[in-house]
Length: 188
Image 1 (tube, one colour):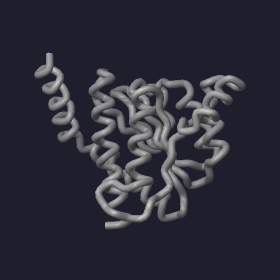
Image 2 (cartoon, rainbow, N blue to C red; image 1 turned 60 degrees about the horizontal axis):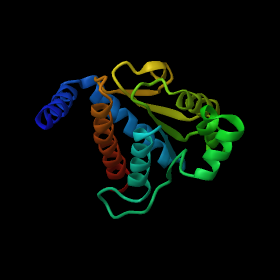
Image 3 (tube, helix red, strand yellow; image 1 turned 135 degrees about the horizontal axis):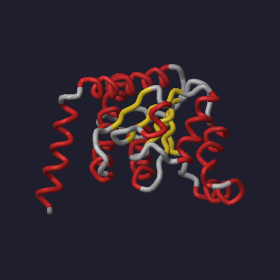
Image 4 (tube, helix red, strand yellow; image 1 turned 90 degrees about the vertical axis):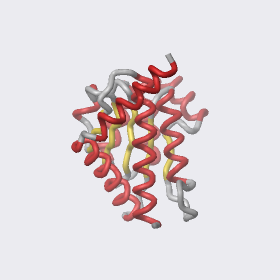
């Protein structure tokens, strides 16, 4: 089983290597974030479960540092304040929690990176709708179909797989590439 899982991961990444459209979308996502920072804006991330951990991981890479010793930049997650998340979820429902956070801290020109392997997470879809109302650009990282998020994205990065662990592994790879491109362009 170990070799099989490693082989599946390699095959997925090899498939992406030959997907010029997906590679261009990764570049486009980086450019949206770079332009936001150049305009004095920020990047917010959201996801559930493993994708929440990925969101937090990538926000930390941008806000702290990736490769370069440089000034921090504003990147955060919608779920970082547990008191906010539990209070809003209790009072209004979990489906609205990310959207309310975006409403509280977002401004026109910010970027939302929404991560969902299915592309159908209701709380993330509501977050995207709220972000769009405010004037965010939205980058969606999903699995192969893109789900309902595919119609809401400025840039859709839909990993060509339906296997959640392989999608999540690839989201981190893509996220790291985006962080490196952003950091290099802004500070390199």
